[in-house]
Image (tube, rainbow, N blue to C red):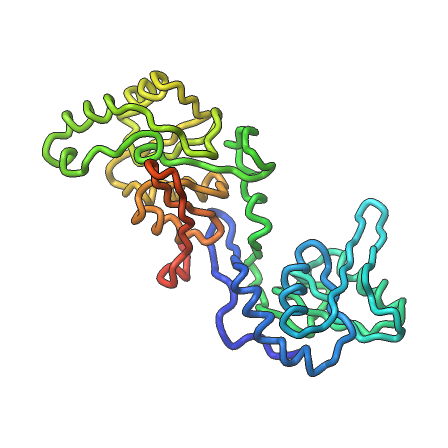
Length: 317
């Protein structure tokens, strides 16, 4: 086994009752960078990416090393490994790449199919643990006993288990939620709230509706920093302007800051993507590295993606 990276790989994320380690695309690239010279020294005839999760690391590694890229796919319906673009000569030395070495049989059967072709097969994975059927030759991190993994291409799996899914998402398994103020209507100045709350609320009620953001569809989900006590007047505003969310979540009290309320709801509902109008709040919410967070300018009708900052390297509930 080759030594694991000497730098941190992945970000621990606490998702309610579940503890996971989030691997970003940069984490995966860093694993490839760490092992690239060792891989080149072994003179593999091809790097075989096991679809779908193994293709990302395999492609990065193939590009970095110049080693030919092949693919493997396991057809679960027939129990048949499908192999593509393998070296014509036999025997060969291959590096099989997968996202995780788990308890299942997929990796084992693909490896056996390669070995039956006379190949000498080494294994690289992003992560593994003590329950894995295979000990990898190269890896990014070994997971702790109570830790699960989460990759960028699996974001939508969080939403599948949510009881609040509406079925109206553009993409299956991808749940998007929206802020309200600064998205569908202009924000009332903060100093007016501080000087005359009733006047600020009345001014907010009179605000005209702005064109909704491009990804909004009736039946979408709104998560707002407004208070639950404002629900009736907020619903009246939505009705006047023909906006029909499937559900609207409002803060229970002033005890919880707006950005933290939104962040907690994203975890609870398994939301994949959030559109926020206030930059500071967007940056706080982006401390959830597995959630795609956009800062939206309602007048320019443009969005800018907000990435998790180094200060948010460890995420807690």
